[in-house]
Amino acid sequence: MVDFGLTEEQREIQAWVRTFVERELMPLENEVLRRERAGAQPGLTADEVRDLRALARKSDFWGVQTPVEYGGMGLDSVTAALIEIELGRTFLSFKFGGEADNILYHANDDQRQRYLLPTISGERRSCFAITEPGAGSDAKAIRTRAVKDGGDWVINGEKTFITGGNEADFAMVFAVTDPERGADGGVTCFLVDRDAGWTSEPIDTMGERRPASLVFEDVRVPEANILGELGGGFKLAMQWIGKGRFLLPANALGGCERLLSMAIDYAKTRHTFGAPIAERQAIQWMIADSQTEIEALRLLVLHAAWQVDQGRDSRHAQSIAKLYGGVKANEIVDRVMQIHGGMGYTRELPIERWYRDLRLLRIFEGTDEIQRRTIARDLLKGHVKVGQTLR
Image (cartoon, rainbow, N blue to C red):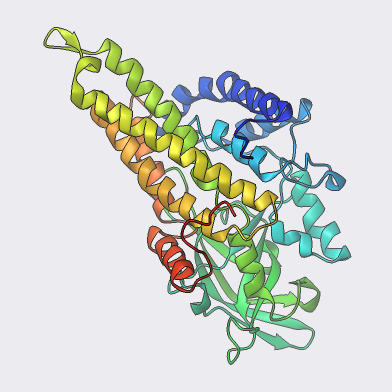
């Protein structure tokens, strides 16, 4: 039996997040746009994020997928996807507090006290540092080296496009420790404090995100700061990358819902040649196509999340959801801008902001081309059979 209904708990959580977004986040949008037009740093300020998280925590909304034993809500992936959809209904980038990168749970007892628990509580901030100037989609091509020197490892290299790298006080750095073995047991993950000597510089982009370039010059790290096992870094990296790829198109889905609603409202009130443009077939088809794609994306996202909850290998489903979501979200925001005409192109409305932000979805955490490669490879090698998605 296939059941497309939500549980009562899921409906309550979904409603709570939607109310939070509408009451607390959306009222800040105009001020954020005003600040951005004035040249201020994009998005919410650190103080605004802190206050919003504190407000949510008063309602026990903390650590959406953090295990209960660590003080989180321990919610399933489908519910997490529903939450991300609601958060996507505003262009403001916001995450509830109480989270830590999934691979940090591989920390030993000492590392838990120094890194994992302080990250969950919000006292510390981490970043995932694997991408390099010459190693983006091909993570196996990393060149950052870590050489053993007594009881320490000395790291040299550069990382780029690191999300949160400017704000982090420690980084999960992936470095080659055995060049001969490479990704097959020769890459190790190190927990590296900023005060160990690495530096960061922001990279300006066309959207809100300002990733960082990290530089490591003879940065010494004690043996005790190896996360997981020596040589086990590449497996950890793949676990991090695949932790929840479905959440990216889920967030875009929420944005598309809001954008389409804006287009419908505008089409009803904007008149040309004596009639609202909602009566024009060209506009109607753009609205119809967008709604069809939104509903298809919803099923792809929730199915991928369901597979995660079922303990299945969900990488294929997540690649499909991310590929489809990235392509269609960009098409939808383009249609919405077209419907709004000149007003959509201005910075008075959030459409052009979404236009810039959604373009990133086709690049980061696995480009469209990498998703297509994964999907095709799975089919050609027989890992996935055509027509057996639900089996």
